[in-house]
Image (tube, rainbow, N blue to C red; front, top):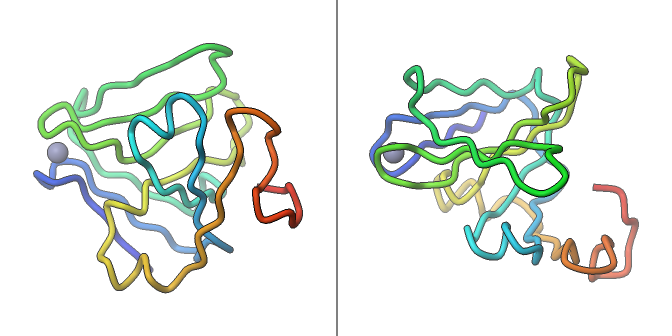
Length: 125
Ligand SMILES: [Zn+2]
């Protein structure tokens, strides 16, 4: 079990499955928020936040909503806007302890252009 929270602590998450790796993506939104994503099935993640405690930013192709704490502004997670119950979501590992971040390999993903990992390995996210 790994937990994370925004800076003020109003938005917290726990994951019950470890990610294979963490993803640093260079797309227009990820590079701006500086997120370090762990992608997981939505049923392996629990997010605890006050009602209306996050801003949901929905961009471009409207595939996902990026959540940030309404109080301290930290980007904590994104959720799929698909209706599939087992959809993937992601939490921002920069909300976790440094020791937890250090456990995982970080892979750079070229979300801005080729939609592939820049290490040349599998493009599966
Ligand atoms: Zn906060």
